[in-house]
Image (cartoon, rainbow, N blue to C red):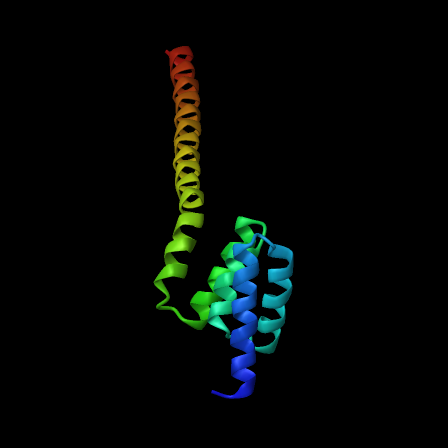
Length: 124
């Protein structure tokens, strides 16, 4: 292990300690430095997902973990937990849009049938 790699690991461990002490701003600063140095630093992205303030930011970090290592089951599971409710909500919205569209088609079909019925009743 080179001195540079050892330094990166030491800074990562410092960032992890900061996260555990709930000093997330300081941890994010260290993690950003590590990620700037190596955009494919999987562990830094994973801990950045814990250190950020929002689920959207965590989702982006976890996407980066999976970009670097598609087989990372921790990142995949966390991303599923974050996006799961969003996916269910989108499914419900799609189902409601389908019902709305079917109701509108039914209404227009009924209007057309009533117009034809009125037309034929006046013709006879």
